[in-house]
Length: 492
Picture 1 (cartoon, helix red, strand yellow):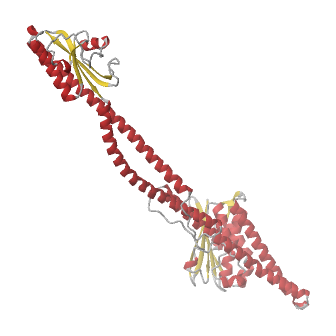
Picture 2: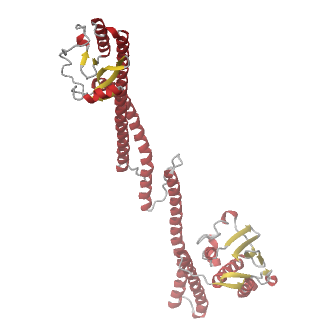
């Protein structure tokens, strides 16, 4: 049968899109987190810079005023302070000014041409700025560093830093440095974002390829499993799912699936063999019976020979009855519909009784029985009727396959937990390659002997099934043209 490979279907695309979505969401989360981190980093850096600038200006102003305490109203002192403010504002791009203790702006870069400490006329740029009283009080108590609009003094958020300065240890005013943060942060974010997008694009391509390959590796064994189930459902058990080189659950599933397929194949072969063998085993005696009956009815067989042929018919009917009985027993055992009536019995007595039942055939073949008179009472537990069947089938086989003038020996053995008995017969023996198959259903060592021995090929299989119910075992040993020995172990 040509194996049709399954195409990539819903499973592959489903998991490919799921994995791809997970990757994209992961990149999105990482990107957002990175942007927040970058924004926070640049904000912190900007605030630290404004703090540092405000502190430097306040320190310079304090030193200047303290060194010129007697000339605090001089234009020279005002000029130096204006120059410091103008220089800091020019180099940092920030809004820089000095306020008095009331929060009024005294000096800014635009007052550099005024040269007066007490400057009553505000510049056009800063005349709209009014430092809230709360900020003045906070500046008096210590430095201020925050992101705000300074009480709506600015239209956008600024990095605001206020640093107080003192004259003769008295609070004299405070320096303010206000730097707009939006532009700097956006610039930093744009740079990092551009770098992230390039890296993410490269990583996304590589991850997409990896996800595609990995999803394909996962989907391929599943498609193979689908192919296998389709073939098995049609009765073809020849296909095996290719093994994958891994040690995960999927690899173990495939291994067990193939083992199941092998078992199903064996069961299917056994079923077909069973049907073929049953048909053959029933056809032969039924043909014989039908031929002899028709011969009697149409007069082909003369009256003086009818009894002889009727005895053959009776024998074949008994054979069919025996076969049906065995098959029913096997069916009950395999379906679990058999009950075991456990009781104690003397195993040696059962062996003796069974051999006595074959006395006529044993005498006819001049077979010597060894060990039967030396058997000692051996108590075993189990279903007495079933064990009778086991012993009967073993003795029946031994008598059938022992040559004329041959020997059959029997013995029993005890240990703490089990009892054993063995039946050994001389004869052609069993080939080594057949030893493991003799307990298979309908198996015969020599198919050509089937008609002569009237064997059904079910006896040993039935024995093994019965012993399995009793937690017992049976083993076989044989040497061609020498002997065959069957040993049974039963729980004590």
